[in-house]
Image 1: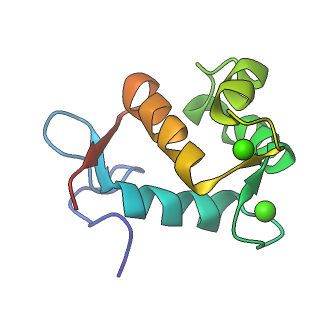
Image 2: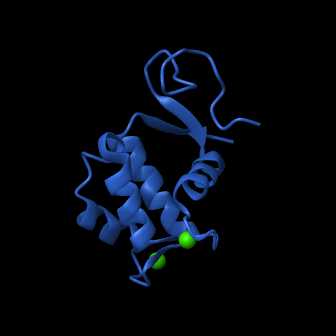
Length: 103
Ligand SMILES: [Ca+2]
Ligand SMILES: [Ca+2]
């Protein structure tokens, strides 16, 4: 199943009328892992997140990356853990055109 349901020709698929990309938290995690888990160990390290910020440019450009990474990695173990992904989701909702919807 594609992550974003296709309903427009824009580069972002699955845009709703209010311009938000809607996804569930599960989809958000899957998307993060697919896009940014470079070594496929099932979690996002600080380095991977930093790469993501750099590579994504516009997507993350409003994010002060070091601050963002720090605030995402609450327990400071160098990885964005399962529960810390929620922090990223919060950020995505506040700063990006993403809306996390109930499953
Ligand atoms: Ca990884
Ligand atoms: Ca962590």
